[in-house]
Image 1 (spheres, rainbow, N blue to C red):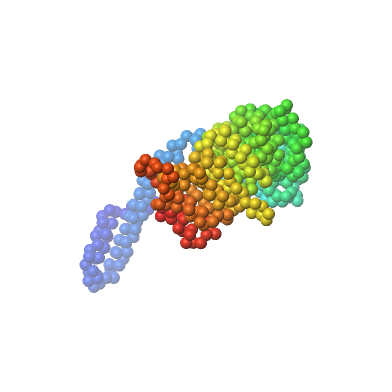
Image 2: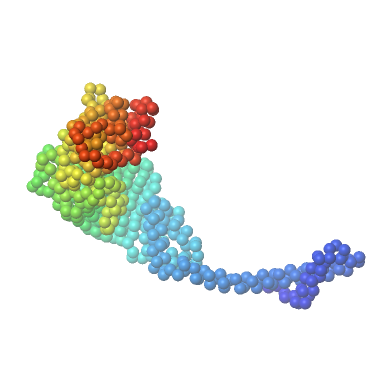
Length: 558
């Protein structure tokens, strides 16, 4: 709207009059004020018109300035290719966290006209088909705007199984499928048309590279999934679902993750045949896959050759037989729960000879035996990556019932394979049961671990017998009790149950006290450096507060 331009002299006169009257106060109003009211009103209107004119003129100058500033903003300096990569990252991130991709595209398109044109016209942003969308027409738009680019199928939500309408849309373009993701679900949908994914039997999956189906409910799939030949498949993850293993063929497979399969869903024979058919496999994860192994396995005559395998995670699976069968040359990560102690008995499992330790080792002997490099090689990458693994090492946890002989065999293997100075953390404990004797730890073993920095002893271990043997018959020249762990900084006895206050008090006084026994033989008068105090020490909670605080004060030097 255009405003009339008032005469400059009229506006100045009106403005000067108002300023003069304001400076003079109320007495400046003339006695006969009736004639001045229309004049003042006209002057006020003239000033309002002048202000409107000036405001319009200011906006006219600011508008191109704002446009120039927006044009020079960093977001506009990005090349279109970089901007598309940023959008694509957001879309793929939405694909991973199970949010609706069409909602993400809608949000991006509302930022500005430039973004709207970019989102609508870039085919790579429209390559995801999904069962649940805010708009019923989204999948039709995606098929049109994606042109000939590869497609990613996503079936996430409470009821992820595909309906007949989704099948009719997706099946004609099965040759373009690059990834197929389903799950998780809470229960089976009553109106699902294809809960066992029989649609895949007639699909052309020659370009499929990733296949992932998950079910976190007790239902899972009704029948094994009929996955046809997939020559390009590189990654597969099955949780609660099984495949028709006799027809499965994926020679280019790089990562295989199978978990939570019921008994009989995968036989050991099918698993071995599957591994033999995937020589390029690099990541293998088997978790809670219940199967029975054959009575006789040809361990040495027919090994499974996986030369590129670099990560192996086995839990709740016959790991002993698999470890004897698998041969690899590039293993970087190994995690094995419920491992049999027989792996460390002659003949030694061949895979143990290929393990490498790049750091320190933690050794735990409780109801099970744990041996692990630090930091732990866990968790595994959720997605297959061509680059190297972030954490390398191994983590073994044996099955229940491991005895002292097993512990000594494993410790001897660690020392012989990686050296004395690799074991830095020790933990001992034992389940206290009626009729079960307390566990005694051999001092001869602990006396050969000079790099130990942390020692934790819990219930069920005869601490009295352990500490009583320290320094007998060997004592230092100063008369102090010999301490076989010169680098020990953390000693945790809070849950120890088989230890007397007097033995622990004598040990602390002998090692860190100010008074020490005289040497048994004359020694040259030399000034011997006092042993360093501990950085962390907790006495047994069964002790009285007075004794426990006294011992802690001596050990910590407080």
